[in-house]
View (cartoon, rainbow, N blue to C red):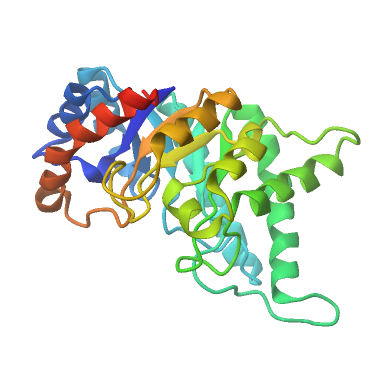
Amino acid sequence: MKLAIHEAMLPGRSLKERYQQAKNLGFDGIELFAEGLDERIMDVAMALDAVDLSVASVHLGKIEGYLSPDSPTREKAISNMRQAMAMAVDLNANHVVFVPQWGNLLTPDMTPYRSSEELASELLIWLLRTVSDLAYALGCLLHIQPRNRFETQFLNTVPQASKFLDVIQMKRETGKVDNPFIKIAPNTFDMALEEDNLIEALKQHGHRLGYLYLSDSNGRLPGQGLLDFATIASALKETNYEGWLCLRVNPLPKNPADEAYPLLDALPDTIELLEKVGLH
């Protein structure tokens, strides 16, 4: 398993200086936000090449509209996703992560025909079918990220996300329930809030995971909360998970130049913990 860190958690006066911090700490890759990446993609590529780091993933961040009842809004969101996938491939990365819906659902409640959640679910299935062909063509993995109830009204748990993958594949190829181009990218912080049993969720749906965020029960770095990362490591090994592990605190620093230095000071202890339990 390779270890990555989100770019916003790294301080420095330049991209090269920030990425060098990650390299010095032993990280294998960087996660980037899609928003604004097209305008700086060459600078990012040059800085990464200079310090010999990879791009672990491109995250669509707060870009939304995938489940909007308004067709032009949905089309714009899908266009943003396609662009993110193309940029990821340009940076030799094959992981793109998105949150289907932030905040409250926008789909109308049309009970008894369809509830708001049922309509949103059908839109998500349509979206995943639409973009899976592009993911196949680009050789890119698209990851659904469940978030906790304080972030979204829709799709909070790994089992819920896994059901969508079952549906889109079973209706296309009877007898198969695994789509190799659509995966799940949960965060252990969200799982601690939402899963009935975090460890069992990892074991039962580990084959669905393509990317995993590591943060503690309080949203801080691993080792600064209540989660048992040794047990998490054992669960991942049991499912033969070999994907990226990405450190990401919740919330991310809004001003990395100032706020990320305390994180930088704490990262060596976190990495030592992860190495001790076998997560790096």
